[in-house]
Image (cartoon, rainbow, N blue to C red; front, side, top):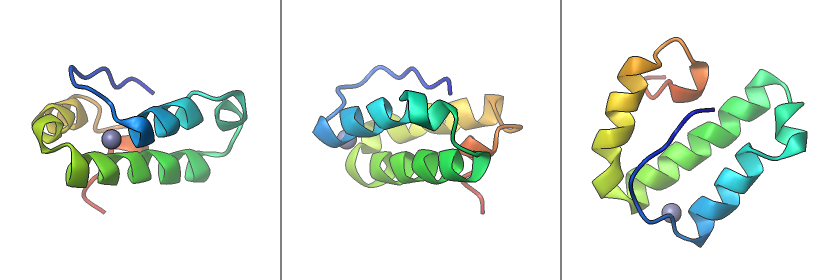
Length: 72
Ligand SMILES: [Zn+2]
């Protein structure tokens, strides 16, 4: 997953980013990975409004990736 944003991640962010890049997540199936990614994006949406716009532009450039599907 590629999501480099210029913001200060809180503890929850760091936990989720660690989870997303963990070895067990690398071997998890797509559905689980998408779930965790969606959880992270929800967290950003509700807690880090300043990065939502950056996420949205990232989504536009990565629309083929289900991890970035905000339109379900
Ligand atoms: Zn956070």
